[in-house]
Length: 221
Image (cartoon, rainbow, N blue to C red; front, side, top):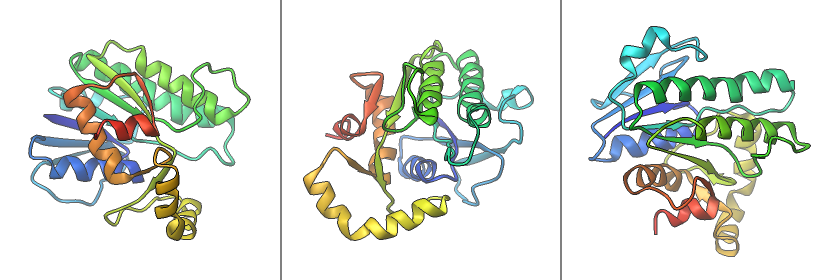
């Protein structure tokens, strides 16, 4: 299996990259981003590409792929709707359109978030835009496409969020996470679980197109 990862320097992207590099069934992992991950592995190939809205110059490097894990995301705090849409929707739509054309047999997994609004009509700006991006991905003629909507994510294996506020939140919540996982088993996922569930979805499929935290965990059962 040859896998492409967007957002491999973010928390979920780091998890996807780690699990792909550790999986003997993954022959090659290609990352696309504005900067390199800083990791070294014989299976890893990195495409540093500044214009994430246009892939014409790197299209020859985006063929022969079996799966794409789109983990690129940004916090909406302090952003206008236009700016947030340009990144969250614009990049996902451009990537999905390009990859569906070049790799129609691909499985595409878009990492969204709990509470995303696929009707695109809700009051919350971030939820509407996330839902719009989900719809754009699911409308493409891939062999299969899935949306992952994780809620609370517990980072493992040295993985850290790039967002300072999230890092503080994880430190504060760390003592409570074992209790919360026991009380609400479908609320919290680990980075390890998310990365492994992506690979399962590619290999075995999933029972629905949009998977909440409980659905994602169920893939590993």
